[in-house]
Length: 432
Image 1 (tube, rainbow, N blue to C red):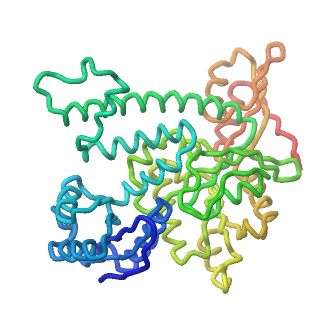
Image 2 (image 1 turned 180 degrees about the horizontal axis):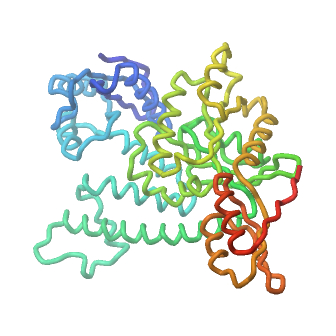
Image 3 (image 1 turned 135 degrees about the horizontal axis):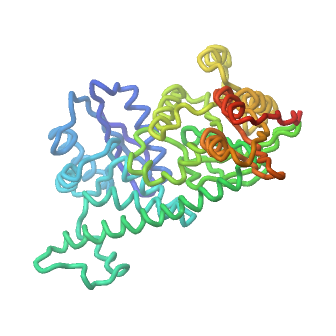
């Protein structure tokens, strides 16, 4: 099946395959998203081509007849780019480019291209370069000899070594340097997080383009970059948010998730995504007006599981209710997600309700108390640092005073530990 559209900037064809595990409806949704990705990257989709198959063709991903049909289309329309909705092997890319005589890109390559263009900070640029090199290494051609300029020519080529082997070795060296740099950045980020521990922390997570940055701007009065395109935000941004009645929280905007997000990209953005794993709670923002919002929720939850953050205390924030012609189904949404709130960030609908839900959830899930122990009880003090988050530590004579923040589920263990050490616990005053 082929669908033609108007031409524009760099023109491209999208190619997708539906199998037994992927329905035509799911493929159509995925291609819609791929078209948005192509638009973000600066290309206009002039045609879509789909195929039903029991399995992918090992040599060319699609069948030989479909390859011939695709070649006729790109030659007739003079289309310079073909984008596949799934990841292709290096062999498949080589075979397809030979058969089609045009540039062939897969979904991961397209996402990486967008990330390269969107990276602004030193950290984001380092993360993107690492992901790009890891993606390109098995697809290596002779195009990467420029890396020798960064590491010098001495010792970069052995006797009888081919140029392709030299390039691979230089890329692996560069990957090693980038990983070391990201480790240092990760240590710096951990130092920054330690400085924020006097405040509870929440991370905004969700599918890309659901309104996370808009919500952070409105709640904090800041000016985080917002654009109605996929992956507008790559760098995490943390802002102070006043929840009212003496309550406040530090809220961090994170990179949006997406279908088939490349695993190596998730790994490269580890230091950024640690903001999710280090947060006290998550605000999972959902575009409830999107026809596939349930699938988007599932994709975000799968990615959180990959980050070992699936068990985090989570408030479901269903955004863009102003776009719904019929809100009758929201009752069903509420029944499936007990911890929820419905809002519109752009219209300012129910933002006070969101703040109240946050305060209620924080009071339900976390306790902040002051622990008094003898300064000689170093074992108990050390255990408190392991079990809880110590936000302040001071000494008055022979007494150690620790202000701690603990999850509600840990309270019994903490109280028993303090009691056995001969100490006492004083509840922090209620700011409200």
